[in-house]
Length: 161
Image 1 (cartoon, rainbow, N blue to C red):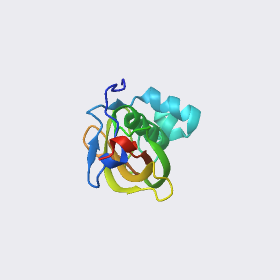
Image 2: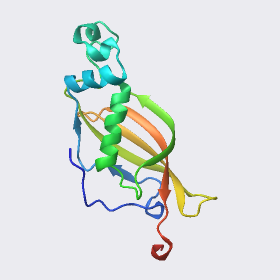
Image 3: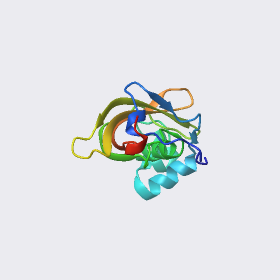
C-alpha cells in the first residue's frame, strides 16, 4: 500500500459538517501472520496468537487485536484518507468501538465523516475538527468506529477566502 503523493491538503476552511472522505478505494489485507506478529509484540493473548486457543475462545477463531485494527486504520488514514494540511494530529478520541472481530483474509477500508468544524479561540492559525472514522471489512460491515478531535491548520492569511 503506497502513499498517494499528489493529494491536495485540506485546511480548516475546506472542511464542512457532513463531508465524507473515503480512503481512495485503498485497503489493507489482514493475514494470520500479521495478526500473530502484532499480538506477539503488543497484545499477547491466546485468541490473537494461536488458532486452537482462538477457536475455543469467545471469538471462535483467530482475531486481530483491536489495537492492530486501530493501527491499520491509522495507516489507511495517513496514506489514503482525509488529507489534512500538516497531517492527522489528534488531541483526543471521544469514542472507540470495535464492532466485530477482524479475521485473517479481511480487507479493510475506511470512511471518515466530518461532524464538527470550529476555529480555535486562542490560536487563530488553527482550529478543531471532530471526525468519525469507520473501518469496514470487504463486506462493508463496520469493524471499528472512532470519533477523533483533530487539530487542523487554517489556510495561511493571504490565501484565505
